[in-house]
Image (cartoon, rainbow, N blue to C red; front, side, top):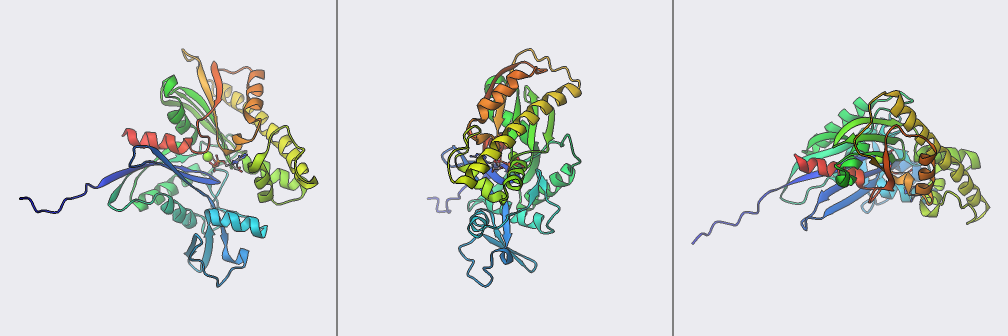
Length: 342
Ligand SMILES: Nc1ncnc2c1ncn2[C@@H]1O[C@H](COP(=O)(O)OP(=O)(O)OP(=O)(O)O)[C@@H](O)[C@H]1O
Ligand SMILES: [Mg+2]
């Protein structure tokens, strides 16, 4: 009779992590072999900001770093809306924010929470997203990539970066042999990639996104950006401005103008960039354009971008312009696919 205790095999967990200016998203394969998505808002508040010093924080996601206490992610978002306070970000324009000395430490706490391992599991590979180099501005992509690699490695994972827009092609373009052009309309940046048979041919970023819209609309109508975000994310449509009170209608109208300007800017800049690089993009087959990212979720967005794309001559042959299956998680899913491939 064998009376040795039954040993549970140690499971190695591979993950995909989308590190976004506004959202951190993790994709993993669960016990039922299904892809499971978890996300956190990449925002924080200092306790001084919301005046809850000395209160019981046990039910609130928070971190103590040096002398400071910080309320994190979704709790920070909710408190900011209640108190009408501006949220702090660990990232700006797709990269670690230089504005707060604690940005990196706070980001590390949130990533650790998101990448948690079940008991008995072992950290495997974690492929994390990085932006492309912005075309119209200087960037710190190298610093950002290295900080992320350190954070993910310190949790115990084997860390590997992957361009955010290229990840979308891995998640969405199995049918076209992993060829396509993807545009990720995020909060801090808009990322673009052209991938041919899973090889990235071109990757770049444009320094406008949802934050650019929110800041401009807030300035135009005299409110704070998170109030604009609340209206925008609830039920905004690019061509409908007539619901809500007068102030809300003004926000909706301004959102419409800035949204259309952003789409026009991205489409024009993408074509200019494809032409400027002087690559031979004459692929044998036409390729799909995949639209993704939270900013693309506004009502009427896909119709507007399709109309803009049709108006301009593209240096490559497009078969269709369509949404990613889930525009908020497809980057993390593409990162997961890459993590599982090796
Ligand atoms: N339903 C919605 N309608 C309009 N905008 C939305 C909606 N949901 C989210 N957004 C906006 O999408 C943006 C966040 O998108 P996403 O999560 O793709 O960005 P990110 O990955 O965090 O940023 P980045 O890729 O630029 O670093 C924010 O500006 C947010 O306000
Ligand atoms: Mg993103």
